[in-house]
Amino acid sequence: MAKRKGLIAVAAVVAIVSTVVTGTLVGLVVANYQHLGRLARVVRLVTTEYLEPVTMSGLVDGAMKGMVASLKDPYSSYMSPEEYKHLYEQIQGSFTGIGVYISKKDMNKTVIVSPIKGGPADRAGLKAGDVISKVNGEDVTSMDVDIVVSKIKGPEGTEVALTVFREAEKRFMDLTLTREVVNIPVVTAELAKQNEQIGVIKIAQFNQTAAAEVDKAVQAFMDKKVRGFILDLRDNPGGELDAAVDIASYFVPEGPVVYVVDNRGVEEIYNTTHTQIDLPVVVLVNEGSASASEIVAGAIKDSGTGSLVGNKTFGKGIVQSVIQLDAGSAVKLTTAKYLTPKKNDIHKIGIEPDVKVELPKDANGLALEAKEGEPDQVMEKGIEVLKTMMPQ
Image (tube, rainbow, N blue to C red; front, side, top):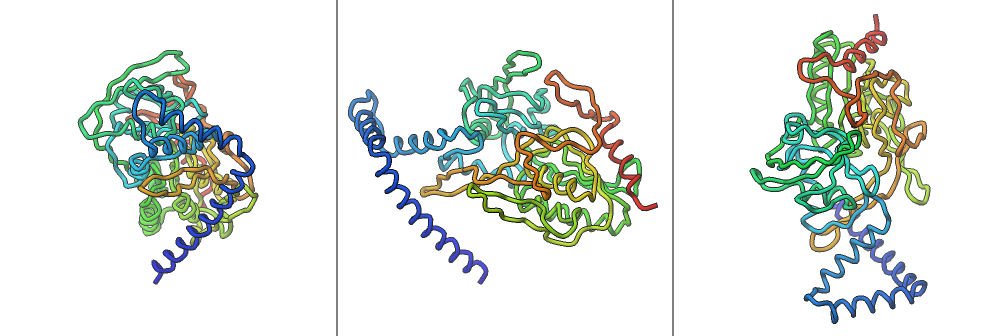
């Protein structure tokens, strides 16, 4: 029955969208008669005069890509069926590629947010802050991030050539990496080595399984009578909004977790989904903590139920909606911004930690995280702060 209701709701939405689009097109024809006339003339010229044969479907695809690209929003794009398919591969828990999270800093910078530990990119020495300029010799600086991802991915065992610019060193690097199946460790949970009364939950990404995995970890820790939690969101690039709300609900009181505001100023409130754990929490963050990570961190900071330790977050406070079109294509469009419970807009700003940990910087000016076997200064500071919050 629930499925049937969902289908009815979707059908109603499609009908409404169809009506709105039809009305909008009529308005465009009236208001932009001259522009549409020029468009028709360009189509005629291309189809009749261009040297090589063209298809109308190819021209329409190009027009739609250009239309969305004209928004100059690095997070919005028209996606072909193949590009749309690649969009959701990553949230399934594994993918074939080089093991790297990327995002857009602006229209012409595809930036590595973080390499996945142990993956090809990590082994090759790629770092957070590196800018990908070419993939297999093709300039990708102005391409949508999902299109860049689709070009980097490929069959296991094949090679991909990258040209990467390291800003602090003012130099380009050419690397050839072999694609492999990269398993994403979504949630890891263990007792802190320094104090077994503290449960440490590290979330790599807010994908489809993250909330269920965190729930399992929380219940296991509660059975062990832990007295506090470390939530490690360092280098977590984000993911699904619902997963972020579910996970944040463990650590904030009943009420709003995040406000989502559309282009008309209409607010949608995402409230907590279950009861808060009555234990203190410290959240570890850095420059790679983005989007859904910032929703969780912002909710905990605003509610005052925990402390943020580390370095300022990435600063992505906007929401994308993916609208599927015919034949498997889709449009990914920035449709809203999100605000923290205190209605702070953190887009392009980030969230400052309550306790900043000064770490040595790499050549890109980004904080160097601890290597295998080295003391983790941020974790150590987080445990130190958490001890002061734990009931005595």
